[in-house]
Length: 376
Image (cartoon, rainbow, N blue to C red; front, side, top):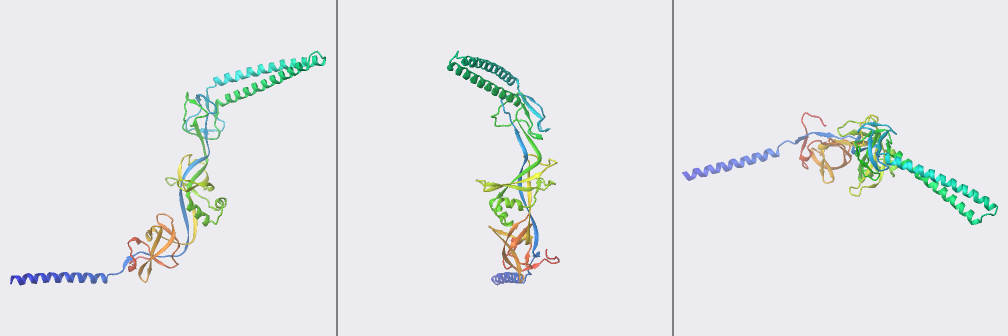
């Protein structure tokens, strides 16, 4: 009797397990289609905004350097102050240059006197030669002496001009209107014309350049998009661009790309392109960072959510709904931003695609539109 009860219990448990499995399988087979948001695609025009990190430089960003060596005796401006073109900025010790100029003046006077003496001697020799009282050699020596004296005077005058120029160089003037940078040299520092550092920099920020780098592939794509064969042609066809600070504030003035580098960077293969902007409020300064936005209008494209795409290596796929089931379809396009993907080929007007969580969908899965919600 005991042995029979144990057999009955095990049989009951086995039967219960089989019923559970059968019931589970039946539920799976009869489960409803998976519910997802969908989108019926239609062709449209879309303005794509390409963003490029930019390095800002003033159009008149000028290093102020010493043209002569000496001790910096006076700094005439404060760091970061506004300066005008021709305004004195620095004065180098003038004493040795004043002394050199005075010595050069004395040499000029001496040389001028020597020339006068040589001229008088020549005049006398010519009269005596006319009276046949001296020979031709004496006359020639007098003429050569005058020429030598004249050459000495020219050398002395050149030395004086150089000394005066050096004296003038002791005062360093601002080359442009702008803002002076932090100084690399202070009073009583010795400066040299061969120094690797400028004394300061004057930045004129009313007009600025924004330098960005493009990959060679993108540059070629731009040539194709605008139907250009040369860089000059591309620059004429590119639309106005906007400049933003790194925190997103836009410069009110639009700019234009106006120059493309003639060579690519050896290490990265990128190409440098420059945009020019008016910057009357000096919102940007020399050395600032920002980003340039290039708008490009795409005609007759499909705009779908990024969440509707699956990227496998260099290919992009979406799921179309065909007869209630998900069918993977390769599309070509570009990511416009974090939300939109612009499809140029692979879809047709009226196609219905899964618009969310495409990574969770499998090929052939039964799909129903989300209950109570319209297509996106």
